[in-house]
Length: 363
Image (tube, rainbow, N blue to C red; front, side, top):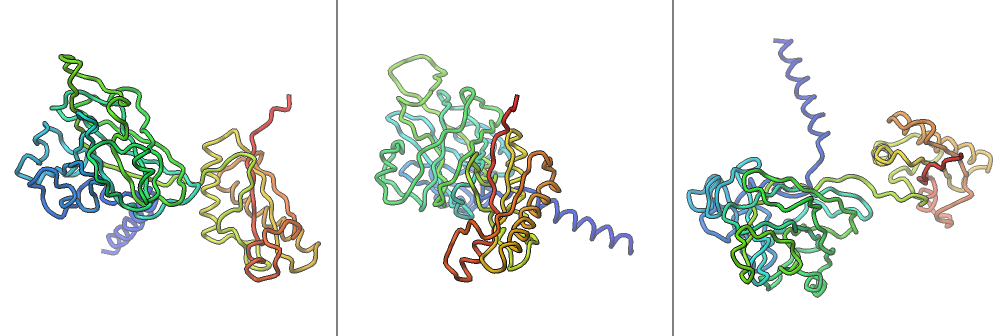
């Protein structure tokens, strides 16, 4: 019995550690598993799917395995397709006559951080009854949910006329047309956040004339066809800060207590972000500078600031960064961020900064 208890505790601990290593998806109900009502009516995503809604008059659909109507899975009114995972997915037109469009929007679990990078991914499959395929699907982010009285495409001009802030549409990178009617296609794009993004909107933001469209029928050049897609497994994952070469950054949360140079847990997480970025960019090296407040002698502050810079450099090396890619130095209280003599200013000045630069070939 004791051995079994130890095994259960160990397994539970391992599960918690493994779960914490999985990147958090900032999209609510990204797999369309959660629903308010099992779908029985077409164009009813606003009421059926938890968190998701249509930002325009376009009538996006919700499909689920529980439905016994034309909105079931795998067989439905647009063809046959199993879910990418789970039991549900959404369906919408990315191309239709007279620039008719359908979109889908969802609130994020947190507002995105300014200057930080994120990866947006989704799976899509072309419905069997589509007349053609496109290679244009994009995303925008907005500060508040959209409610726009139109059935046509959401162009940048339309979005800029709204009272809520939105980003410009960014396209998923495509190597060809999204023309697979049997298998799911996985696409992704990276963004750098502006700091207000709370809502994700997906769809084709181009007009018919601007959309890359592949007509399967080729029977007529005067009529416009339809491209209807299923969407599933939508995720937005945090990648870390977006650092630029030759620019100075203050390390987040690396503000030391008075007369101390130990790293706090939040500081270690910030340094892990720096390490991950340097690992992905082997052409960069990092220079670290330590700083103190105005209390204490100049000689003492020089030593203390050097200790702070050394602590950061040592932790980056412990994470795996090569010693040859790190330099560090202390500057005491000679370069304050805030010269006012307040406790808040002094805490701000007890910091570590870094600059990333490219390796220069001396030969």
